[in-house]
Image 1 (cartoon, rainbow, N blue to C red):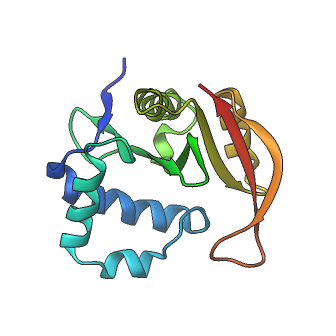
Image 2 (image 1 turned 120 degrees about the vertical axis):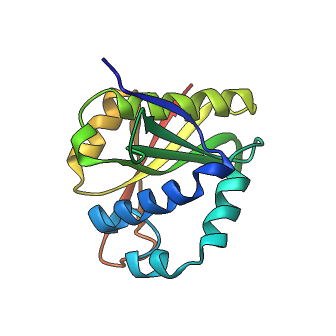
Image 3 (image 1 turned 60 degrees about the vertical axis):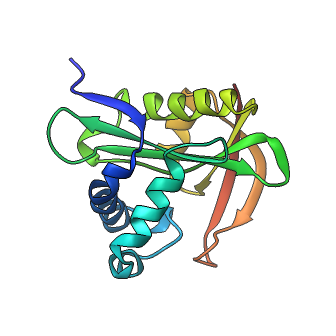
Length: 168
């Protein structure tokens, strides 16, 4: 039985979102654009502002896996790709280790996809660090394909990211 729901964030989630963000960065530092130290130093109001902005509207959204009781267990965001108004960039995907390999990832990506379609965008795009084969396989199972595009990692110059896309 599933003991969580996947839903869009609300302003009331700010404290739990901050806790999840710090967990994300401690667990998977290469997957995100800020360091744990930077995130920990950001004031609570910064988290509140970001959560409020992502709680409504067609340009940026964040979705969480919220258990019946306890901390958030997963996150996926979506935002408009500036150069391609028909595409949503999926960002900051994370699952608490105990929930990896199950249904949570698909539910989070589906929530982003549903929001993307409702916002008039029919394609999803994401980037994965080359060598993170587990993530690549998980996204392939969800219908993403490697586009062949390789990009430098935005914060670690020695790493490369691969781009994956999926039509909705």
